Image (cartoon, rainbow, N blue to C red; front, side, top):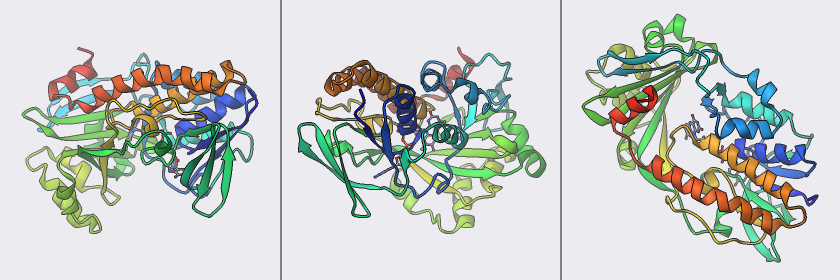
Amino acid sequence: MSTSVTIAGAGLGGLVLARVLHVHGVPSTVYEAEPSPTARAQGGMLDIHDDTGLPAIAAAGLTGQFRGLVLEGREATRALDRNGTVLFDEPDDGTGGRPEVQRAALRRLLLDSLPPDTVRWGHRVATARPLGGGRHELAFTDGSTIRTSVLVGADGAWSRIRPLLTDAVPAYVGTSFVETFLFDGDRRHPAAATAVGGGSLFAVDLAANDRRIDAHRESGGDLHAYVTLTEPLDWFDAVDFTDPDAATARIAREFDGWAPELTALITDSDTAPVHRPHYALPVEHRWERTPGVTLLGDAAHLAPPDGEGANLAMQDAAELALALVAHPGDVEAALGAYEATLFPRSIEHSAAAARTPTTQEIIDFFTGS
Ligand SMILES: Cc1cc2nc3c(=O)[nH]c(=O)nc-3n(C[C@H](O)[C@H](O)[C@H](O)COP(=O)(O)OP(=O)(O)OC[C@H]3O[C@@H](n4cnc5c(N)ncnc54)[C@H](O)[C@@H]3O)c2cc1C
């Protein structure tokens, strides 16, 4: 297949698709809304899973370079209860199979692996419309347009390509993260750094399941926390996130009585707390085969964050690329084969992600019980 593939979105999914296609000699162009590769901080660490993300990186021919990005020791995992009592503490013995990398570093590796000009920055898709015969036209917010005969929506939760395929719209799932950062943890925030340990921390209330503090030790010893709260959106609307001190105090109040080394992950943040609400598509989200267009990653199966989303986006992307390569000259056969495995996999994952685990299940998951 030599027809160029048009990809909307240069997240990990869109970039893995472009890279695996390139490895097989198939050209592509990625249209990305952001103005440059460094326009936005790319979020924290990702653990890349040996059954999803790692095979995708192998298909991209980047395993060796990926290994150079892995942050040693970060697979260490510990759980504390709200009093700071250690529930379990597993060191990173190198056998975990879930290496941790900074998302920005992985994205940079993928970008650097593509021919120059593959990614067209500053191209935000405004609308997409069918032209018939499997062709589509994309209109960008700057007024320019392009036409394509193979279109992939890799443009995330609020995809502008998705409406070509389904009417589904993400809905709030009832939980949110509040994100904080404590820089240079060992030196500036030693008690919190000790609580987090060498890798990931899960701090839970054994009596209630609606409050949790997760944190990771990132590169340079920065501590990155996701505080989970089960509250409706209007609860968060009543928190004034434009006033960092007031917002911090309001969120910290929800953790009254927790150990100070845990609440420090909220109160000692070096950045303003950021509200990150969780949205999801319907668990059964799928679409009828529609000529010339498909979706991958969050555009296809947005689910509440459970540590799988980026891995699945990369897996989708690698499988889609290989399907296009395996069906030269027959885009419909390729997209049909891709979707035949995409739908059951993503429905199974979305169903699991939609279920709020009990505290005991979280502990069992991390201890392998
Ligand atoms: C707080 C948080 C923590 C998470 N932690 C993890 C984790 O630890 N592990 C994990 O596996 N997953 C995690 N996830 C999930 C993961 O981030 C997503 O599932 C993953 O990024 C999806 O990849 P994607 O390529 O499909 O979409 P995205 O990463 O969202 O990329 C979409 C790209 O499309 C671009 N775009 C959007 N709209 C347009 C447009 N109209 N035109 C052109 N371009 C557009 C965006 O700018 C972006 O570059 C987390 C999610 C959140 C919210």
